Image 1 (tube, rainbow, N blue to C red):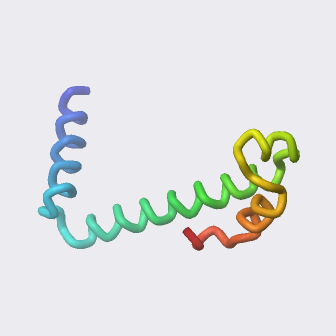
Image 2 (cartoon, rainbow, N blue to C red; image 1 turned 180 degrees about the vertical axis):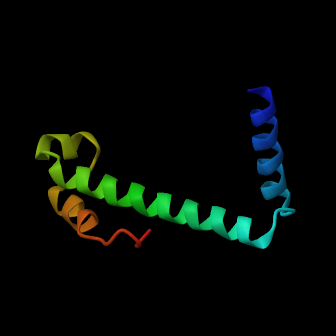
Length: 76
């Protein structure tokens, strides 16, 4: 167990320093991008399901929520 954890830490250190191979850096950046897109999509779908009183609780109008929920997932 410790051995695997050590490799993970070493790999993360390499990525942080930029010492990892280019393909590894590219793969990590792609994974981060896809995760960000998935989070945006999920959040916007949930926002579209909120009731008006819930939107007021978070400081949004139904129009603002609708505008945000209609954005495509790659629009930050």
